[in-house]
Length: 187
Image (cartoon, rainbow, N blue to C red; front, side, top):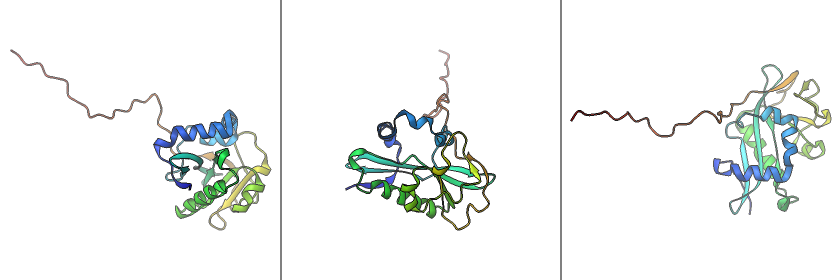
């Protein structure tokens, strides 16, 4: 039986392998990736589905602004291992992520995806007509869900990343306490 839980550091390699398997290198070319690149997911809003400690699904939410000073989340990517598709795992991950976002006080979620799939969760193009993304995208796939009524009313402009930056890989992290240099003693 599969379990959905918050993503942990130890899930990183398995999550990346799953995304490579499901989406390939094309995922790095997507417009949404420009909003995720160099950022951390929204605090507490990265989830994995596991079965017997194997990561079989993943979804993350990211902090963005839906135009000037309009906080929102960007959902994606959503991926489920091919062996588990058609069993409702993608839907379960979506419902879990949306509920967690709502519980966390977030007001709106944006995504780029298949409208036919995401409309069952309440997503539509209704609130995205005056918003745009950095780069090329199909406007019919740019969808929004208001978690609070009117959260995107009047929203217009460029969607931009606002989330926490990833620590630079070149920045050394000292995990051990500083030790004083040994003092030479006279003999």
